[in-house]
Length: 201
Image (tube, rainbow, N blue to C red; front, side, top):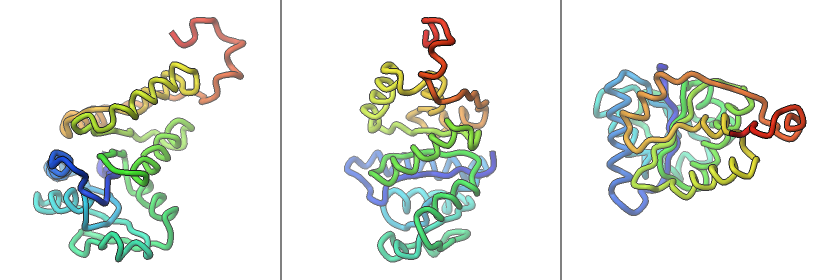
């Protein structure tokens, strides 16, 4: 793994721990010689993450749509800043440049980006690790929902396990660096009649 894509908020959020962990992740990536791929902004957790990685001597690549260049205050100090035409192009370029994905606390955009990467993994469109930094329990309710969807047979256990979860940046990166993908068809009903009742046990 050489490059890691990080999704996170363009706001700082409330508790200072969110910013602290974003900065810790930036330093951890730089210290391991891992290139940071992110949304290209200079505000919120995005800016904190990028600035920490840069200050630690890391390589940082931003990808930002032209219409968000001013709103998210495009970071002109990164190693590379790619300005693209749309959100679709942004997400595709970030995915193409990356060997793994991490989500920090954020809002709707962060969740949308994480779940797109996770869905692509479920569909075997890539075999890159997807990680979640559950800072101070921020994602507890989301993880409970995923467990509920698994228990209600909308997500297979093997696909629920595709999302790696940790609260510490170093621990998450260690798991991602040793990640081995296990894939299976996402569809459940078409297979149930051919499998034993203990299929999900």
